[in-house]
Amino acid sequence: MALDHWLALCAVCWLGAASPGPSLAVVAAVTLGGSRRSGLAAALAHGAGVGLYALATVTGLALLLAGAPGLLLVIQLLGAAYLVDLGLRALRSPITFALGGGASSHPGRNGFLIAFLNPKLALFMLALFSQFLAPGAGWDQKLLMVATAAGIDALWYSLVVLLIGAPAMRTRLERGGGWLGRGFGVLLLALAGWMLLEALGAL
Image 1 (cartoon, rainbow, N blue to C red):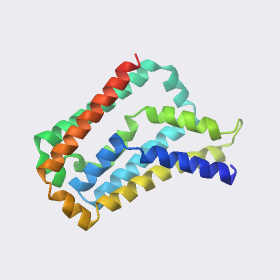
Image 2 (cartoon, rainbow, N blue to C red):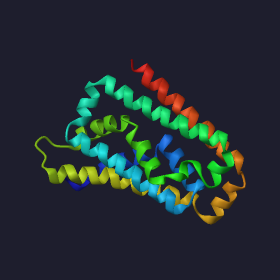
Image 3 (cartoon, helix red, strand yellow):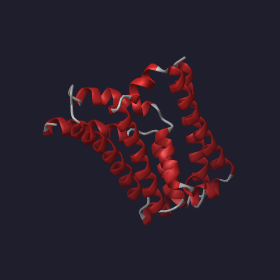
Image 4 (tube, rainbow, N blue to C red):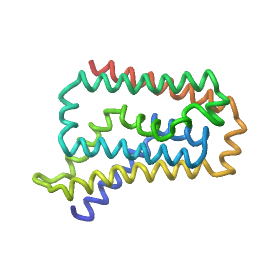
């Protein structure tokens, strides 16, 4: 792959990762509910989930998802249900969620699932890779693209973790205590509703 094409791929992957959404909310909740270490675990696991979809794209699974609306809908509904679960836990125990539990209980799992239960990542990868993957491209180019997508995603969310997990920022945010947890709960439920409406709107 030519250097200019790879840099363009990096730019688009970064724009996709930096777009606000459920992933950012969950990684932030994990970081503030636990530690930088748990936040980084979620960030790296999220990158692995993105890498899985990128690999699925270059092996043709994304085409299957694009042509199987029923399967796509099921995964989207599971993703919305997962966010509802996290949101309700935050509302039931806002202090615990914000300051030491909830989403931070299983950071790696939560980071991976929020990526894996978002099948639109596969469709994003399909649209993205179709612009950069030359016909007849070898596995060296395909794996470079997979590694780029996963690496940039993991790096972006790791930087987010380091920023919001900094002692001064963390102390400022933790003063909100229960309000912070409730805020995450409302945000996660709102994102779940948005995902649900999008999924049902696709019928």
